[in-house]
Image 1: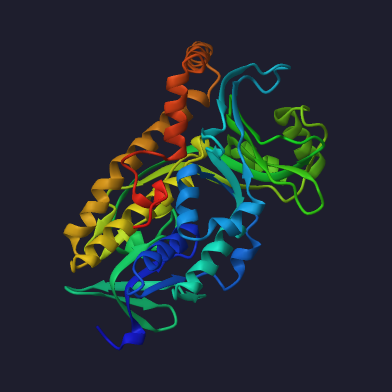
Image 2: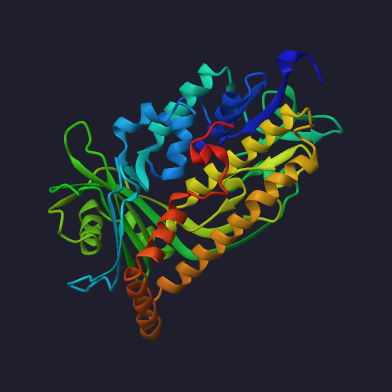
Length: 414
């Protein structure tokens, strides 16, 4: 290794919630380790992120353990109920086929809706308290993997040494490409439209997912804003050509199309921000690790939002990799050695591929209007609704709570 100022035990590429959570998890458990986060985005740009995410109960337990949740909680919205319907857009009545109560334990909701900027702010504050180095506005241009360390080259000409490089730079990960890791991927021909709406009546914490012919339409509850507006987040899947047309339409036309899907149960609705759309597909990395290199979050897997598990899969990566790295370091093992990193791959790859396959099947099953298929899936939804034990199993899986989960997801320190 070179001079101490230029060397870190772990360098994480990507300062989104996965990258920052990884840094905080490692620094919280192992204060002797030096951690750096490198991000190409300019400083402060994260504050303009208007997106929201669903955080499952296990991830909340992790954030509590890391000392972040207390800051997030006042602006988070608990999901108290989940309704699932299957209908056509023009249907005057949408029968509810499946309902989920919103708690995994008394007083513990199975998920919360949280603003990205609130989540990122809490993680950044905690990272700063724990002494994590944050290098912003400079991306990784290349890296050289050697026997005992990796040299990471930045866009400003600086080179840093590390024992382990973690790529958390998104579904189009440049570092994954640099590492020569191939992916399995395909496009669903759909795009996800995202926006925030205000409505007259309160949602009471209820989330809804309507399976429509073009794809799922989700209404996710948000906390009221500072002006007292009742709000919900919309995640609306449409065929890509229709999605591009919709977001290019006049505001009045867009709101009219939105209202036909949203319905009038919460009164008059109003779009609060500019709708955005992004293509939906499946991306699964064939390998999660190489010597002194690991993928985490969307860099390892990008899935359809139909089950709302994207962020939570990323947090499972964080908790698993952090636990393996910390335990290896405590035992005096090389944290970048391939035999250590393969423990992480073994732990996470099956779960990731299973979730990818599940969301793929659900997307293909529910994004069509073929009458026999609709009949079978509606019978299936009704069957699940009548079996409390099966419903509880699905809630537990969605919440990320399992006896085999990493310690952080069970609310235990590493």
